[in-house]
Image (cartoon, rainbow, N blue to C red):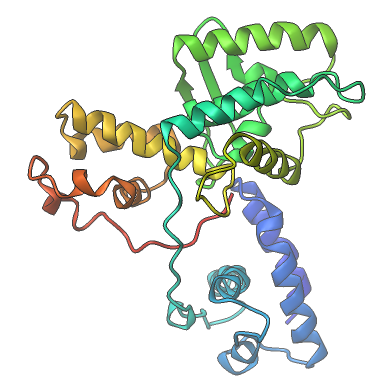
Length: 314
């Protein structure tokens, strides 16, 4: 078996479907090195499972992340007739993610006020403007962090007040409406940035004209959080918590309006870009206890939707 050739072909196939090559590349190539060093010629249970053992340096989540790409490879090899063994899901450990911290209204006000204090940088003349807008946009539109920082200028339709979201975990595009105040914020921001950096195509360009890296967004958020909420008990705050807060705020608003949460949930699911309703139902775990205890909602309707709480990534 020419495993390297099959891996290249699988990665090309995945990319053609809209998946990122980086999702699979590193771990599959690590397995390929193991496979070739052992001199194996067949993809079987005996040649594969010894690599599928949790390592001393791995957490259950890390182990799952390493094995998942290999399972996808095993399914691909079986589909093209190059193997007849698919790695079973039974080898995956059950993982649970920590219940995320939900920001209070005051904490968000403090955070956004701190964003507005960001000084002008000579090295990056748009940075202070970006900081004022990007975290607000991620929160008020419930975006994943990468969806916010990778936006193109053309993704914002000024006339309609909509955003085109090109990348997400479901690998599907979606168009979402934004509130008029958020649309006005984006219009004013883009007008100013256009004058400073007329040639960049990104909505939130770094000094080199490309999107800021994930690390910059995370580090900047933590710095602003520590400055704005020094007395908070929150630990391990991260940008993704803004999305969590948005989703729970929507559910709480619907609850207060006595809306049918079960009927409303598909709308929120589509807005957030979830592939399954179960992903949206997860946020029910995060509602305040007084809401969960209410008899005003028939929670039994959600029993088959609310999933086990698993790890997520930014």
